[in-house]
Length: 105
View 1 (cartoon, rainbow, N blue to C red):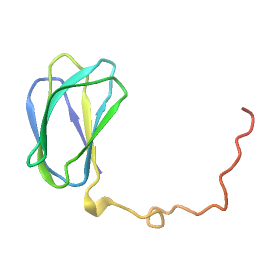
View 2: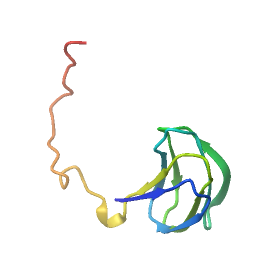
View 3: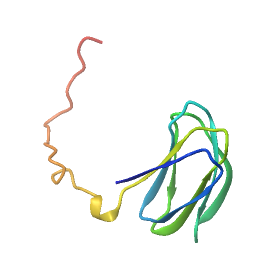
View 4: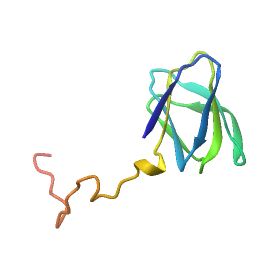
């Protein structure tokens, strides 16, 4: 998994080809505004994102650029490389017969 911190400095950052889905997360504490271009897909301008929220985009291997405008919070761009994807078994997860109940609430 790739996790890239994008400071609110107004600079344009090249993320390169992003496989699958790009997630843009606002670490907070402020609302942030960003511009995003996914070549051959779309260009989004002045996207507002609240602290603690995530926007997701289908990048699907296309070159991706992001600009976190000045005055907001640091954004995190996250994506999973194709070689990093795991099945539940590969991750060591176990199967359960049923969902557990919640007690004490």
